[in-house]
Image 1 (cartoon, rainbow, N blue to C red):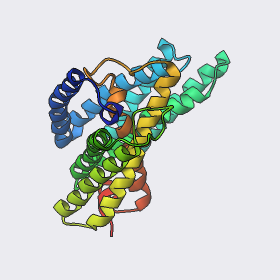
Image 2 (tube, helix red, strand yellow; image 1 turned 180 degrees about the horizontal axis):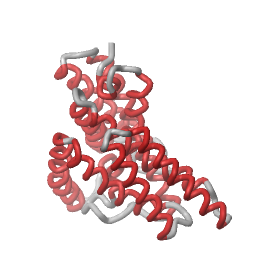
Image 3 (cartoon, rainbow, N blue to C red; image 1 turned 135 degrees about the vertical axis):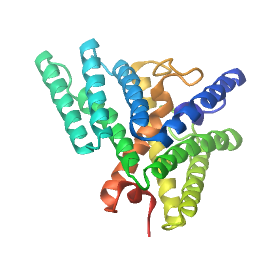
Length: 280
């Protein structure tokens, strides 16, 4: 999600970004609305592209390990879409164990698969788990997407308009504290409005939680920026015109989805959708 939260880009590149978003956003929203296997197909396609790009950013990931990472991510997505998220996590652990065994045999660093498999599998399973909720799954996904997109958009315009001190120049030299605050306010508005629309729970609580999730999304943005700097590349790929790779587009969503999944898990509500949306 970093491209939309960075400081101004040339106007031609900005137009390309906007056109890409106009094309891709309705597709994503339509499949999220449909749910079930159409939405799972979108997540499966994303998992393959993410695996390829992530492997390229990490050291020592050859074709076999890319296939292993992408293959087990696909298995996890399919199993989660079938209504077995716990088994999907087991599939991810199995892939991690295979990758660790290969690296131990080669004498290569073990931190790479320890990072790669959770980074890829956990958010994908979390998104599908939330969407599977028969009552609030659709609302939960639209809220999650709305929070991340509002964070990106409001952070971009607040940072561009206000400027000011940068957060972490060594990782992302154009992101400012003003942008972060703007993104949090935008996410809070999405949460507040979602609660009012549902007519359940506390709008103020969901607004506050959405603001915290905006910080998590920005942290995901910085994490992916760190990976790219370590790999010496500007973008994770060239899949999306104006945005770079798919990881450049979903880095904040990856972190936010994991955060939302943990909220749903530990909130102890009757369903994962209620776990993220309904607060006293």
